[in-house]
Image (cartoon, rainbow, N blue to C red; front, top):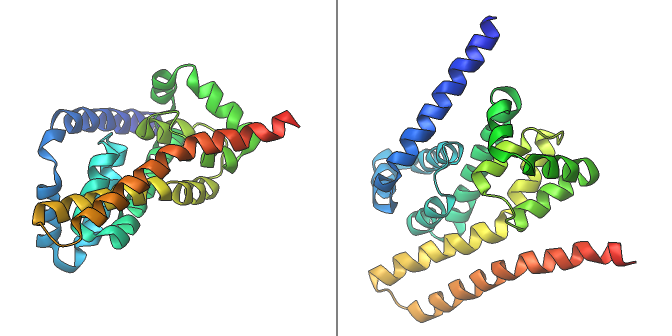
Length: 219
């Protein structure tokens, strides 16, 4: 009885936090994050990754946080911090769904949950890689939905981190290029071209992955 009550309380707290976060998400921008990171000093990257992880659990738009990470930390370290924060948040959502909020997740995903379960049953980690590379489902909701499948947490974490890398790097670089544009630094055109090329590549990846998945079926 106590365990069930605790689950209900944690679930109610989660829903409340999600609602409050969505209502006030306009207040979270790159400038606010920059101030928090600067005030934290050497702990700035850890603070940023923690904010990213919590934001992922509470349905904040990942693109906003990723762009901010690129603007604050640059393309290389920004990508590492963004991916680490996103994977940590995705893992927390995964565990919350698996152990605390399964009914709510099933209600939100409706018929799509069966599709995810069937995909994981037949392909395992390869299906996780596919849904990370091909955005068939909203990222934040997908993290919760995958918690109701039988995929191992370790496989989920590794496949997510690796397969979120292309999109993560592209949007991180875009955030970095935007900061450089505002600052008016040299090489702006070159950075802009690189950013557009990366975005074009990421946009092409889903088509390539779908074609590769169809080949075995045609043999």
